[in-house]
Amino acid sequence: MKVFVVGANGQIGQHLVQLLKASTEHTVRAMVRKQEQAEAFEKAGVEARLADLEGSVDEIAKAAKGCDAIVFTAGSGGHTGADKTLLIDLDGAAKTIEAAQKIGIHRFIMVSAIHAHRREKWNSIKHYMVAKHHADKILEQSGLTYTIIRPGGLLNEPGTGKVSIAEDLETASIPREDVAQTILAALPMENTFNRSFDLVSGEDAISDALDQL
Image (cartoon, rainbow, N blue to C red; front, side, top):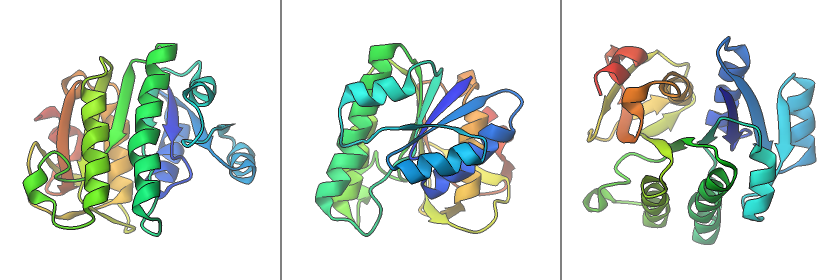
């Protein structure tokens, strides 16, 4: 598959782009919003397109055209206010889903947040959880072949390749590299289609954990 990575310049996105670039099964196109980011990817041998999640659906659709799958791993970041979270994490995701529908890309993987589906567990940064919750709901109702991955607290440590995957898990952490590896593994796996799950570090190899879904 040719995979369109939204949020390619983010920390999970950068891991995923490199994994896809090294893959023998997939190719990658990075979506970024700054010219210098696009130039850096192109220099590294990665196809890149400019588009802004605060722009139009048509802009995103044009950037994604010709791809077979979309991974949404964009986020406004912890340093922004609630307004940016709604514009990027919620409306940006909704626009990307609309763009996929418009140009006939059916496979869509969403990087969400642990417990986004369980309001009773939202203890902090509630505006962020609201954005993730409703973006996930929009995807579930879109008719696309979705997988929603809800990782725990994100770490910049090297990945271990060992995870725990289930519909509901206790809060824990996971290296960003392992999140990217899980996305890559889930892309073609039919038992992840139209499924959502929490993801944290654990004892199972990623492929085995996904097999057990």
